[in-house]
Image 1 (spheres, rainbow, N blue to C red):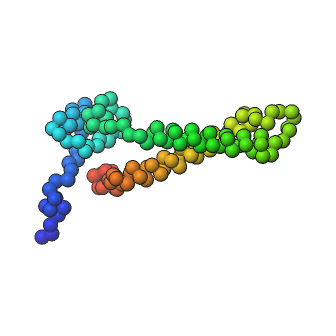
Image 2 (cartoon, helix red, strand yellow; image 1 turned 120 degrees about the vertical axis):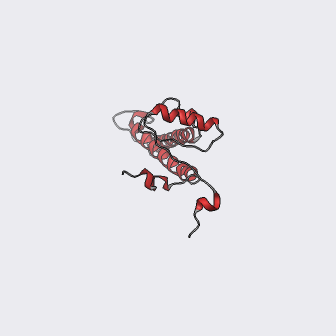
Image 3 (tube, helix red, strand yellow; image 1 turned 180 degrees about the vertical axis):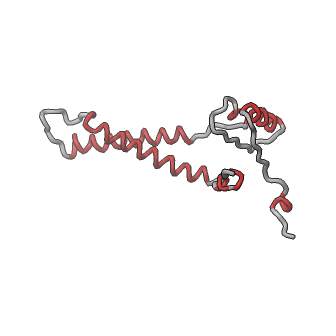
Length: 143
């Protein structure tokens, strides 16, 4: 007979399914009170108080992505301002050289790209510490 992971290392985790959101919330509160800290809960809709029940802590991903996006917007605007005012100024219909509405779409696009790239890189770094293939388990597939 072959030895399993549970035989060698003990029980790694427990999975449960609940009929109502109240049962899930009560079970999460009981598990947290019992001392379990590495928990996760999934539901098809938001449940008030579930994040606190499983001990969810805020992370720095969203503020860092916002900061990098704002840096991308400032960098894109600065580049286009430098091009249109200093490097290659063009007098088009008497408009001022440093007209920000002319480049607003461009620097917002750079903001979007910078934020997306930062989020994907942070997701690779932060997500590498968590198991990625957990939704490929047979228990998560439709019956």
